[in-house]
Length: 320
Image (tube, rainbow, N blue to C red; front, side):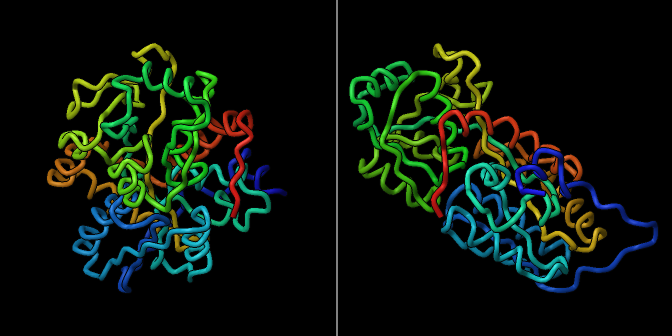
């Protein structure tokens, strides 16, 4: 059975079943692998969890950044690790979408991994350098039409929400841009802040907007953000039906003891309910996750199905 076929019918990302009385302590160091550079949304979400997970389990929890290869380097690092509950992968939309983005994908996201839980979700923000001649989404689209294929827009990899949030708008408006891929939000921000690229769909630019170093044009979610009340959603600026949000969660290699998966999942859910964590998330406009393995597995399958139509319509493929 092909990877894509397994994706569509469900696969192994479901809640592990554990017999009553089965339990074992987690007594070895844990690593959480992130497929992006340090400083971006995936990395900060992972580090928020890692610090508190270490405190709760009384074992070292280390975040390991392994960018590159359209997330394949990080993913295969966990795929090849022992299935003993010591290695976890931070995943986002492209993890679930890679079967339709990459030919001969060397792993099956829904067969080779077990869902653990959702860490956070957040709408993105369409941001531009202050020198860019647009103050709202309508003017942004007008500029794309005036200079088809010329405006440089950063993203963090083919199939990421920072890429597909833009593709959704370009599909709706019949526009083209010059897409520039980066290994994470931090290097993309560097070029955006310097003006080397003009725009980005991103979930970690709030402070830059507040400082006036970037201009926020539109929120990709269904509602405005309380931290940016004057920035309207893209949908309310004349693009009804537009919605795209980031999310980050954890998976483990398939075969990881189910009781360990459930324990780590429960700990992550508990961490995301802590008052200090929720305060940190609120400052970043992130929504704390609260999903068990079964719920997170179903969520990822639904996200993959939701975005597959756009990927095929736009003929989006990832080169690795």
